[in-house]
Image 1 (cartoon, one colour):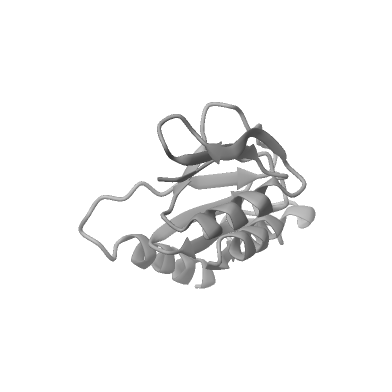
Image 2 (cartoon, rainbow, N blue to C red):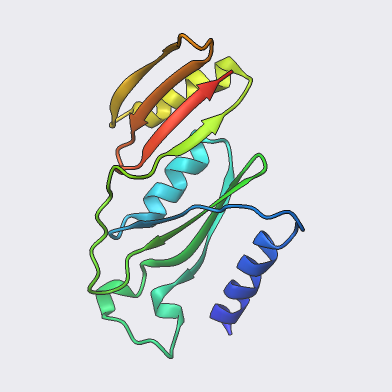
Length: 152
């Protein structure tokens, strides 16, 4: 029943609007809960672990995998990011083909977010005024997720 409640929660979370939304779903190799808590702090958001792999009696998993996160959600401003640990036997390999992009008009907030994402990560483009007038930078955070941060 817990898993059914989790699925219903996720459905309600993403179906509040009649406007189509793209919701990123990030996968990790066993540290999803750490990532969720870090992003809650970095993005001044809220979130929760909705289900763990051990919650589903129809899908047996190895004992060491039972407490890993099957579904989690992060909300900040009007955004949602879904998160999960990898399935048993699957390895997540983060690539360079996708960036999460945050745009906000509050320069102080953008600088704070960029600094927190860069802590323990790698700045690939410093957060600076660009020729098109925006404050813009890129960073790979300590969880190997690529971000583009902009303040128009």
